[in-house]
Image 1 (cartoon, rainbow, N blue to C red):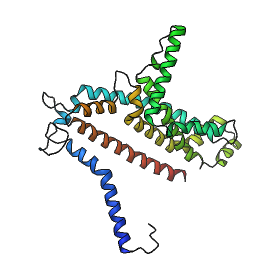
Image 2: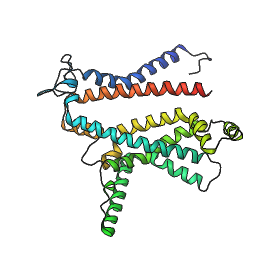
Image 3: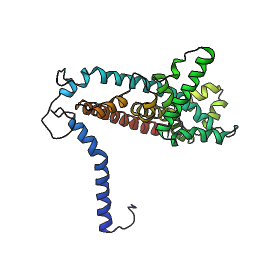
Image 4: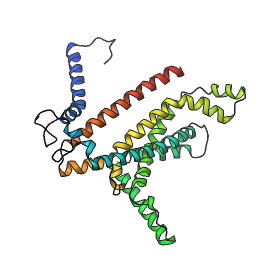
Length: 288
């Protein structure tokens, strides 16, 4: 819709109706889920039975809130461990990859760039199965050949971290590369002329300029890792992450405690998104 051009009344009304329906479709399920977190019912669905805090603070025996639910708390802790590991690895490797792909000439640049993008177009289910089969084959090779039991190649937290890292790093790299393309190289040249070393230029000038995108990439990596399901499903061991645990509860039948978990997740991720947007805009204003 181009505001400077005249539009018919029907077009304007249709455009507004589309906007209303679009955002209703996006946010109505989230709003209903958040409201049902306070529903005094044993089922995570309508009808409304009254207001209660039991699904957050209940100690049982009938209603156990999320803050007293050992299984869900353990799965949240597992997801945090995985997400932190993926965030650290993806941010470090993604930053270095962004520097690499901004170099003008190095061998096989286009091929390596294509290979970096490949995990993004491969379905998560296929990626998870492929990583599981590969890690199993490598683990059996080391065990049969050398008698080594390589634990991180068997399903568990480390394999989940490596599996998520394989595709989340690509997203972090693209985010940082987008900002690096706008970097004024004359700033580095001026620093060299003033006697700065290569390390000082990268640390005090380039990385300082990239700080908003690095922070944004780290936040995106954390959120994507925390909510990942498809890839994690095939790589998880006995310690289930939160998405896997929620899937099992929904499949087998659960109480509105899953709505309480959803409420906390929506509130947390929304807060992180707002903070990231604020500091991202602040960083852009500062750099300009």
